Image 1: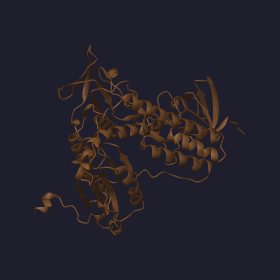
Image 2: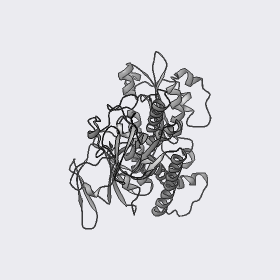
Image 3: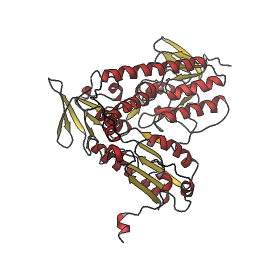
Image 4: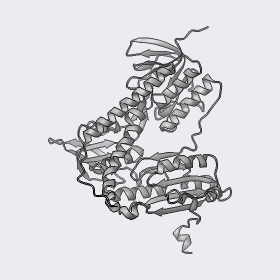
Length: 460
């Protein structure tokens, strides 16, 4: 009988790797996890957690202004970037410690080293210059920011560096049109930075419902973000005074103090030794896996962003849990990637679950649409003109709610509960039968009774 050093060796101590390690260990497996940077991964160290803290910070300027409508007189407000960074770093250190403690308490060995595959059962630990063997290997190394190959790209930053800027720039250009791009555009804008956001296509937030995309673009422009579509950066030139000159694909030039790329992330598979182990990769460098997160090599599995299935922290956690339960508890589990509630902490916030209108029409033909746009109650005294938008997509025959899409304050909080309803197959009649919570914005979700009719049809 072959003897291995470990039952399971995990490469990467992010959300998916940590969950898989702890659950596998709880079922009696001897587990080690290798991490070359810090335990916690992208989400905790340089992603969702510090990002959300920055989002909170960026809201205060607007809230100070709105307070006057409620009788508050706020004195001169001053923002200190270095204080925010220090407090953010302290919180990340705390969370990093919790992750380490949880792994230790679960009996998982933590190895601070880069790990590289040598074959289907052997891992080389670069930091310790030694090999270890394992019956199974789980790869959970995540993804890394993509930066295009253009002249001057060395002067750009990604979201990784944005969390550690020594000084807050007066002007910044954010290139990209996804989660990270719109979130950081809102963060910097809220902190008083002059923000220009560029997107190479006709409308950003590709893959989201078109009404959400249009509404977010309108609201961001109202807040002062200079949104420019159908253009991209072709070159970055650094001047003697440190100013950056950006040449754009449409012939324009932008002068700025910083440029941040948020043009997607790519699976972090380079240099992992996957070729030596015979692991198959996809066109984007992602590790190809089956529904149980197993690669073409029987002993090697992968979860999280490195598989490029759904690059979201809760998905990685669920995949890690399912892997461990399947392999070490003999409870075969798969993850349903078809219905994933998600929030974008843009300003205003987005919450979405289920099919977009375009997807619903493609899958089901005709669908019923219910939507509303209104100024939240808070805006009546604050003077804010920001609008909340809500949309339900309903199958006309089954009455099943196929998708829910929201733009506005607390969208992320609302969509978590709505995700339960949509995942359970709730109908529009069940939404209608639910008593409204008044006065809230969320009550609109159960009081929308009138189907939306396109203007052209309404005029007939």
